[in-house]
Amino acid sequence: MPKSKKEIIAIDSISKIYHLGDNVVKALDNVSISIYENDFISIMGPSGSGKSTLMNIIGCLDVPTKGVYKFSNELISEMNDSQLANIRNEKIGFVFQTFNLLPKLTSLQNVEVPLIYSSLGRTERLERAEEALRIVGLSDRMTHKPNELSGGQRQRVAIARALANKPSIILADEPTGNLDSKSGVEILNFFDELHKAGNTLIIVTHEESVAKRAKRRVELFDGKIVVDE
Amino acid sequence: MNSIFKNILIGLAAVRANLTRVILTSLGLTIGIFTVSIVTAGVSSIDKEFDKSMEYYGNDKIYVGTWPWSFEFDWWQYRNRPKIDEDSLEYITKYSTYVTDVSIKKNTWTRGSFGNKSSWLQLNGVYPGYDEMLSGTKIVNGRFFSQNEWDLQRRVVIVGGTVRDGFFDGENPIGKKIRLNNVTFEVIGELKKQGMGMVPGGTLDNLVIMPSSTFSRILTRWGFDELVLKTKPEDMLKAKEEVGMIMRLARKLKPDEDDNFSVNSADAYQEQFDAIKIAIAGMGFLVTGISLVVSAIGIMNVMFVSVRERTREIGLRKAIGATNNNILIQFLSEAVAISIIGGSTGIILVKLITMALSAFSPLPIDFDLLLIFYTFMICVFIGVSAGMVPARTAANLNPIDALRHE
Image (cartoon, rainbow over all chains, first blue to last red; front, top):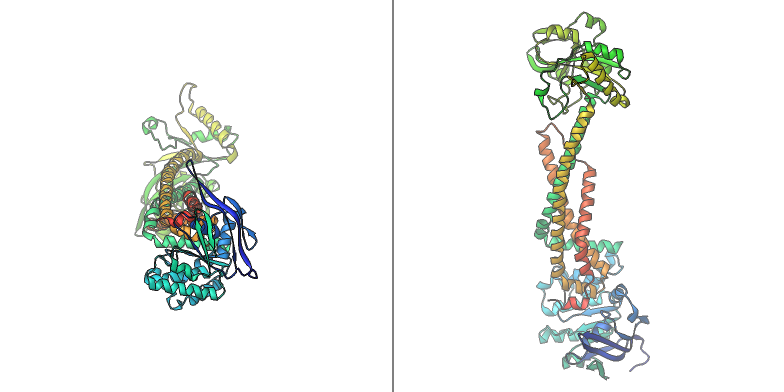
């Protein structure tokens, strides 16, 4: 592991414990992981292995029950809801399996949504959103609504939305899960480009072909990291 | 501040996207605002008219007559009372400590004409100096009749604004000859126009005043007489009591006999009027209150639907950086917008109806900016109260669960 790189995420022995009736479920059991600038990580594991929980915690959508999570030296595990929202807004770009575009908004407006929750002015917002759409190659689809776009194009709009705030990491949850194989490959090629351009990528997947693209592979089983290479 | 504005815009976009539903929901508030505006406007208009009428009667005047001023008018109880006569005035002038000025006021209606124009007019026969006792109006042109003219029973009249407009068509009425009951009178003065009021006949200006001596000689047919007494407004209660006692003395009533006259003043009207006003306002506000509560429940319901429909959107917005407050403001603005749409529709309806009414009704209905401001405040209040619970539900959604919502 290249030690010269800057550490973005430092996760130290975190656990996530759910109480379901009398049962105690350890979704994550004493997990530690560091993520560095320009990493390209795949997180794999069967259902119930805790990969979604780990992704939610890395994405600051959830906080661990125990342990310490630092993001750019900020202590995430101690933050309240609105501090977490700000971290998600400024540092993290999400890409979802089901795209989660707002159906009544155009591509440009969809990409603008995260910027609305930042402190940017209107002009800068538009510039950033246009720039992000240009990066994903959809400059000519800015005024189209999601139902006027193909699946691959929709996911690219979603990626543009993730890029719009210039996040420290991009977190993709099964990004090719709802796409045909051709569009899937397109999107993965695009992730390669993003990685080359210096972005830090984390892809949660159960597909071997997707995981192979990543430079670092993390596997979870029963709430523990079993592979990290 | 900027971010609050942006969240409000997001809320408004949702309103535009569901316009039909929004309009149907806001209908309840339309009705509520409509009722409250009509009631408020109506009450304040009636109030204004009433004040003008009160001015006509004056807050410093006591009127002694055969009948009490009452909306519950049991005329058969009073019809056998003796007529008011001028002898009583001598007693009052002699004994009263509060009354500063007195006059007889003989009332009748007759046809008056000028050239080929004719009209029913109210005639008053009064004493010289009655011009000092006029309230709500005054001589604006010409003069009042003199003691000498009264003594000589001269045929001179002072006319009200309506008579001037009707007969003389903007020309100076002074010196013109009009005919009343087939007798010719000379116009020597003109009264300031007062407008409509809640008095018998509606207008305060369809009036002709002449010396009571002339009146008695020429117009002795039907009508009624009153004593008009002037006092200080602050002495009104004591003066009325005193006048009552002096009248009993003048009428030589025994202690066990009931009054056979009535001592009236504008405040007697005031009490009855207040009761009516409270009844109108009470009913109006009850209806309004119910419709406002019902419409608030409707808005709350539609907001819960909106939150449910957009659970995934809320999840997404929170995942990409919306704070709980951002979401709260978004949904509160949606609720407030629905309620303002309802309220504005109500206000527009009120405006249209007042415009239509003012073409027919002599009572103008007040419609002012303050009313719009209050409506706006009510709408904001209802929107916030109705939207608070759904908006909080939305704001507190867990983004992970919300994103998984189907």
